[in-house]
Length: 152
Image 1 (tube, helix red, strand yellow):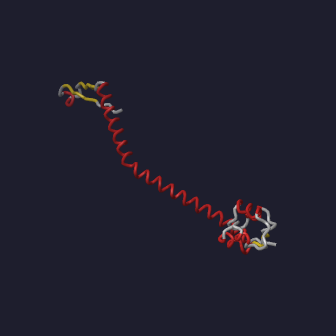
Image 2: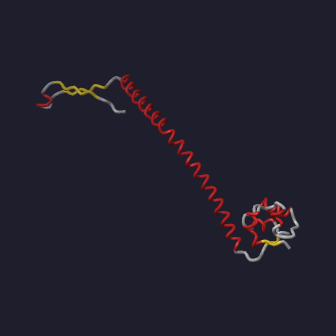
Image 3: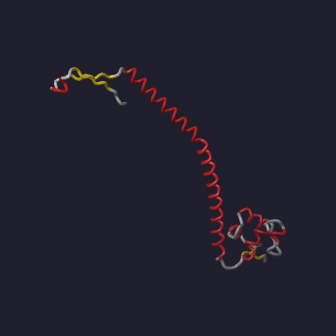
């Protein structure tokens, strides 16, 4: 806290001969406390006003960040699926829908664990396209795996 002092000089000899007396007078403690309280109140009010003004912008920024996070998560999922599909495309041979285990089926592009369980539960198949005609997979899902599957 900055102490304000009032300096009083007695006599003109202080400036001429250096023999003057100097006295310092401190403000009473109650007055200092009142001034500090006023400064604290002004600061509190300024911060409250600034926060009130910034609130709509902060809320909008929060919504924007949330939307960006959702978009990033969707992109990450699509990327992971693309990596898995690309990895599996390099495999030689085909997967037999009538004998493949769940892990082999999940290794096919766009096939989830649930899809693999449904494929297994709906066996046997006369043709690979039976997975579509029986409603196990959609036509779009089948197109992704058509070159990789057979039904023997």
